[in-house]
Amino acid sequence: MSIVLAGHGLIKKYGPTTALAGVDVEVAERDSLAIMGPSGSGKSTLLHTLAGIIRPDDGQVLLRGERIDEFGENRLSALRRKRFGFVFQSGQLLPELPAEENVALPLMLEGVPRRQAVARARRWFAPLGLDGLDKRRPGQLSGGQAQRVAIARALVGEPDVVFADEPTGALDQNTSEEVVRLLTSVTREQGAALVMVTHDADVAAHCARILQVRDGRISGHHQYTVV
Image (cartoon, rainbow, N blue to C red; front, side, top):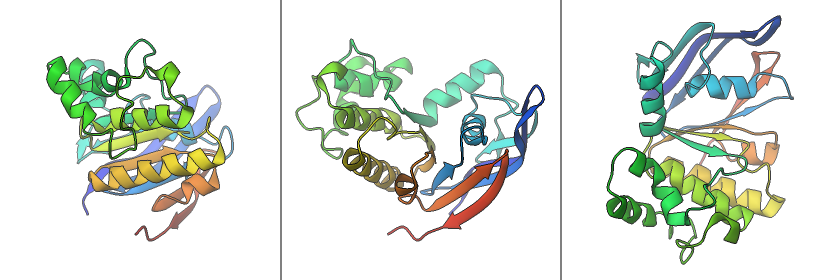
C-alpha cells in the first residue's frame, strides 16, 4: 500500500516546552493509526501538525509526497475541506441543521448544490445504522448517534485521511465500542487512512497500529493484523 501521509523530523516548541522533538510517522492507504500517551505528551500536537492545523517549527508533512507544511493558509484550508475528514470528541455538529445537512455540509461548502449534496449524504445513513434519523437535529440524537453522524460527515467527501481526536471520549463503554468499530471499518472500506488520538487502550486496539508518545517522542510502536 502506498504512503498517504507522512511526517519527517517534526519539531514543535511552545516557548521552553518541546511538544514534538523530531517525530517521524507514516500512514498508508487503508491504514489505521492510534496515537496514545499521557496528557502533555505531544499526541494532540502531532495529530494537529499532520492535519495542517499547526505548522511545525522544523520537519516536513507530506500528503502523497507533496509538502503541505509549506502551503499558504488559503491552500491549507481548502486541503482540509477537500482531502481531510475530522471527527472530534463532541462531534461539533451544527445544532440548527438536521443530520442530513450536517453530513452534507462539507460538500455544500465546496459548491455542490444542496439537493445533490444531501442525496450523497443520505447514502451514509444506512451503513452507519442511522436509518430514519436524517431529519433529526443534533439535540434529538443520542451521543452515539451524533458521533456516527460526525463520522458520515468526515467521510462524505471521500477524503484521503480521517483525523479523529478522542472520538469516544464523551461516550459510555458500550457506545464507544460501537462507534470506534464503525469508524475503523468504514474508513478502511473507503480506502482512507485513519489517524486517531485516544486515551482508551480498548479503543486504540481497533487500529492496525498504535504509537506511544511521551515527551514529544515516539516511545513505542505496536502493529496488529486487522481482519
